[in-house]
Length: 105
Image (cartoon, rainbow, N blue to C red; front, side, top):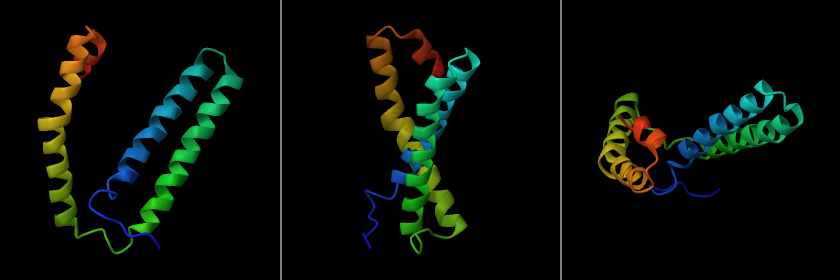
């Protein structure tokens, strides 16, 4: 079985982020009457969910205590606030993307 490392353990979180994105696109297509176009979005959403569940199965024994998991989650959020969000805000400003800028306010 593949080894879960510090670099690979956040993967299920990224996969789980893709699930709602694809599902949102599916729902939007359905709302405007594009039932057939919604189907591939639904399929992608389900596939991403399956990938995330499979990856989480590999993590058995790698998930810490609740306290450790909370600490990791807080550290990841701090890292996102310090490193990722400023980069995204800068890119949105350079592209004059007001909607993206508003998302980070």
